[in-house]
Every structure is written in structure tokens, then in C-alpha cells.
Length: 383
Image (cartoon, rainbow, N blue to C red; front, side, top):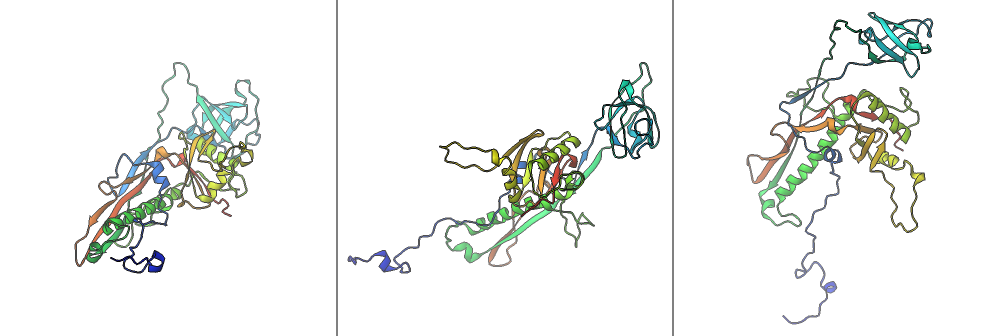
């Protein structure tokens, strides 16, 4: 071919002799990460029924609440309590943080009789709402065995939820060559799986079971209850129930929530799950005390691990968390389990035309053990 001297700019990119330069990569802008599922890891067991159940137990309670202020708060020996059956004759008691100790001498149906100022301690005032701590019982030497007491194991469960997406590619689309995609069907499978994993994490956090017919029917879809929905006990709201007022998240609120969860459970919170706004609030803890060397080229302004008096917590940033919430989890008591043989998979559908189609589906449920081992802060500022 004779030399023409043409340059690329004079030839124009649309001319047939100039090949298209398209990167062999399809980039996806939509978020699909699943940080909570990654932190929890794969479960070691499977669900064997659409209603997955487990058993929980607890020790005999060692505290109760005073229901009525005595006429003489510093001297009356009869004290009305919420659960008199928690006490036994011979129990030593302490009210709140007082120095006075008491000894139980009689247990009634709604009250107990005690020795005030036991062991030479100084009697102090007691009142409605105060907590009585049972230090321990003292048995008589040579006494007969007392009545056995038990706790009833609780049977808790959650329903499985089916996550499914259909992919469909025409015969022509399968035959042609694509830019950035070696196999269109495989690409659609991968894309659907990413969407389903994203939806699974969001449902694990925020899902709720239907109010009636949770087992599902021809008209009712079976859905799982998520973590946020199930945490009804250790639920802290600024300004409510003795929790500090002010809607901004600060270290005092976070530490108080961790302490209150610790007081209710033998577990240990090791995950703090937050959205972006509350993550920035946590990263600003102690910001005024940070210092940098003159030759340090990096400016670090984030907290990935929070070490408190109540354990070490990894801070997990999940965009699927409500913006006003901070989730406190003991990860050893949280599992996302598939129904046996129903973890995410691809199933081909029958060919009824000039296309190939299939289902990407999976069936999962959330196992959240011992809700008192976890906690949540709601109603925080998002502006």
C-alpha cells in the first residue's frame, strides 16, 4: 500500500481502518459490598426447616426491684419487691450501692422480711425503684436440702426468606462478541449474585416478619426478622430511660451503652455497626488530642477499632444501617444461615424460546441468640 502520510487525527476515529479502543473491563458504580456478612463469616451449620429455632437459657436472677417505699425507709424490715420468689431465707442483700447489708428471714408472696443493718452495717434509706442485689445465700450447718429451683429454657426462632433474581439472555446476545464481557450469561449471573448479597445484608439488618401468617402462604411472602427489629430490650434513645440527652453521638453515650449491655450479659460486644454519618462521629472521638510529627505526610482521621473498658470493638461501616442508629453486636451470637441445600446457586430454567434463562436464588435466615447480649442506640442526629 502506498504511503499516504495520514495522521490519526485527520483519519478520524470513525473510519474503518481505525480500531475501537475500549477497555476490556465493565465497571459497576452501584454499591454492593456486604461488610457485616464479611465480618460474621460463613456459618458452620444450616437451617433444616423454614422456621429455624434454637434454645436459650440463663442463670437464676440475683437482683430484684423494690415496688413500694417503706413507711420508714431506714428501719422497716418488710420490703415489697417485684419477684419475691427470687429470694431465699439466708440471702444477704445490698440495696443499690449502699454500704448497708440485709439478711432475709422470711419470704412472702410479694414481700420479704429482712434484718436491717446486718453485721453491724449502718441502715440506709431504701425506696421504690431501687435494686436489691442478692449477694449469696447462707445455709445452716447440717440443714436439710432446700427446694430445687430452675429456669425454663426459651425456644426462639426466625423464618427463612427466599432471595431470587431471574437472568435471561437471547440466543443472538450469546452469539455475538461483547466488549469487556467474555460470556454475557456468566456476567448476568455474577451481577445478580452481587445484588442478592447486598439485599441479604440489608434484610439481615432491617428486615421484619409479617404480622400474621409468618410461615408464608399463597398470598403472604415469608420474610425474616432482622437485627434492628429484634433488639427491643437494650434499646437506648437519647434522653430516654436515664440515657444522656442530646442527639449527637459522643463517647459518653457509646460507653454507657456498652456498659449497660455488659451488665445484662456475659457476652462481649465486639462489633459496632454504623452508617457513614455515625462512623464520622466515632472517628472524631479524641480528635482534639491527635498530634502529628512535622515529617508525617499522612493525615489520619478515622477509627477502625475502638478499645473500651468493656472489650475491643471493630467498627464496621455498612451503608445499609439506618443513619440514626449504632448497632452493638456480640458476633459469636449472630449467624446468617442458609436452609440446607439452598445457599446461593444458579438453576437453569426450561427453554421456551430463543433465549437462555435461569434463576439465581438462595434461602437464608438470621440466628440472633440472646438479645440481651447486644444493643442499639436509636434517634441520633443525622445532620
